[in-house]
Image (cartoon, rainbow, N blue to C red; front, top):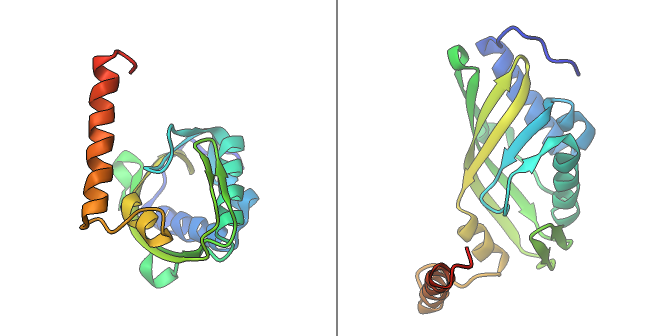
Length: 179
């Protein structure tokens, strides 16, 4: 899909959001990737570094659909909030999924847990013409990891110990000039 240079209208942004969610719900990687610029940037709190370009985006999506074959964004829980003047939109959403496959990503491998998750969040979208050029997702990744069984309850002593260890590890790295 070739981008036009003229900015999107509010109606076009809302139609884009629906098409984007439809592609994700159909697990249609090609359709989703057709909606972005060649140099798209995808930021996600679960990613060690941003995903850059269509090929990396396609790889990440395929990995997600292997791990979560029933991943779905219910239409009634997806909303677009547009800022036409700046070529931006915020999408609020909730997704549901069951981790039935291993999640293999550059950050490592997470074994399937068979557990269901429900995650709500928002995505800040920037457009270049009529294509998505940069999107940043915001959601509670710790809650998602807890729902999947990878972390203890966020209110328990076990989680506090994990957080303290992470904090102290960061301090040690800084003191040793490893960061």
